[in-house]
Length: 270
Image (cartoon, rainbow, N blue to C red):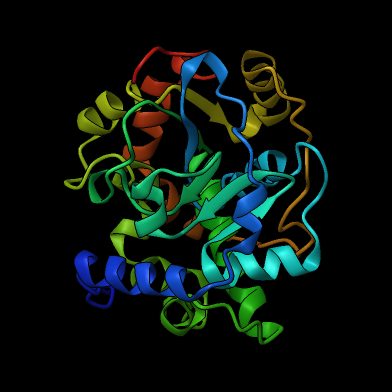
């Protein structure tokens, strides 16, 4: 596996995001009302693990009253926040996430790298580890074949190589075992499980409709199912590739086995 590029210091990232926020058009915030605070939580935060149906969950929160317009989606992607129907949403913006003024937020940032404000209702989704990695591979192939100019492509295109076995050798561990790394800097299954106990609501991709319904009923919100990122074609693996993959993600299968009983129900933690 290759190593990821060195990250920009968090303090610098926050300063840049703060400046961008101050320079953005914030007139839409004037009409933002006091959004619902289910069970007394000040906001909802999603620890978004890629390729687990997380984009669908984000869409469910962002479409509680009406769908975001194309302009609003573009604004959100450019600025890391948007005010829609008097709700404030933030995404992938460390400064705004840690600042705390939003109804629902999300990012791919691991728990050990971000300070989510106290009294936040937290949620995450776990998926069958092998299927999640295959979906990541499929996405990168789609980006390359269709020349998709995604911000992450500049780094992640190098993960591909010529075949799936190349991908398994090249993908950094923090991407391969993202479901563990999201909750443990040291890739410890025990630590990840301990931190998952601190997440208020755990969902499984394989039970997404059922778990979304349970989440919506608990929060008292009409959360709808959205289909995101599908239709990119199948990935055919040889028996050898499948064996290599299952061996590589074996620690995550252990985590899923231990964390599975937590899924679909609320845990009190503030």
